[in-house]
Amino acid sequence: MDKVKTGLQIHRLIQTRRKLNTGFGGMRSNWLLLLFLFLTAAQYACKKDNPGSEPEQTELITPAQLHVTVDQEKSQAVITGKADSNVPVQLKYQGELGGLAQAGKTDAQGNFTLTIDLLNGYTQRLAVYTTSETNNEKVSAEALLSDIPPRERSLELTNDDIKQFLQAHRWKSDQNTSRLIIKQSNPTPPYDMFVLVAQKYFEFKESGAFYFTVTSPLQFTDEKGSWTINDQHILGISTTIPLGPMQINNIRIQELMQDKCRVIADIADGVFIISLIKE
Image 1 (spheres, rainbow, N blue to C red):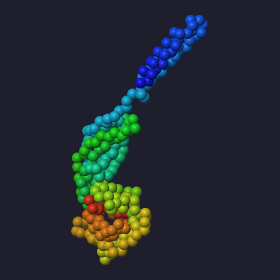
Image 2 (image 1 turned 180 degrees about the vertical axis):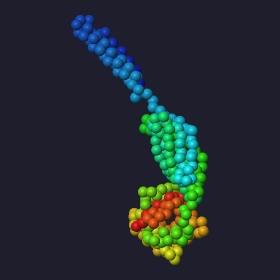
Image 3 (image 1 turned 60 degrees about the horizontal axis):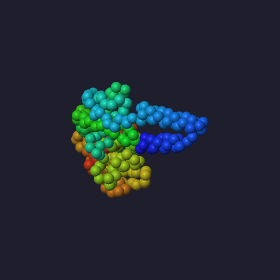
Image 4 (image 1 turned 45 degrees about the horizontal axis):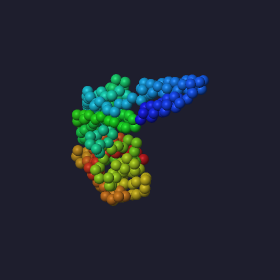
């Protein structure tokens, strides 16, 4: 459209110049016409040669050469692969409701290495994503990983040890290290907000009673809950939150010390990592 408009302008100028006298004024007009033509041509050539005006990359190659190395001694898995160079790369749990497991970036050759912890009693099914933004449009590529097995190394704690640690004091939630593995399919109640946002406190009583308190974003206390532990060191919690009764099932301890506790738990059909610290 710009080239047609410019051509019409040049044509009108030529027709106008032909009507002018051939004296000094006509020569001057011709020189002005030539100057205009030169500047127009130069501007078009610069625009054509400008690399920035060329279409940017709109597709990413699918991550390839994926390899998972499981180290049970360190309770870690190392994932390596190759993709586009210098793009963000993420490990996410498979499915639309899967959360983020790890993130990084490919190097100049497109190589990447990501490390994640093995989880006690949980097989991790992950996908590798690369993303890029071009022409204000976000594009991505995905590749599935082979299953990452559960951690084999035991906690080396007895049930009595676990009870002693849990009952020693009140526990405060740590939102910085709690995370979502699989989000619950029903958004109400918002259990993901309960795990990731709410400031909460857990108290494991000797009698099997469980006290639950939340102080933010609102204040609420339930002292009528209960907790259990079986021979496989798997816990269960029954309590009430501001939106009603809640069951935290299949609680598998990942880490337990005097001042730190990290578990993986099922709430409804969601799976979460819940981190607690000594108050």
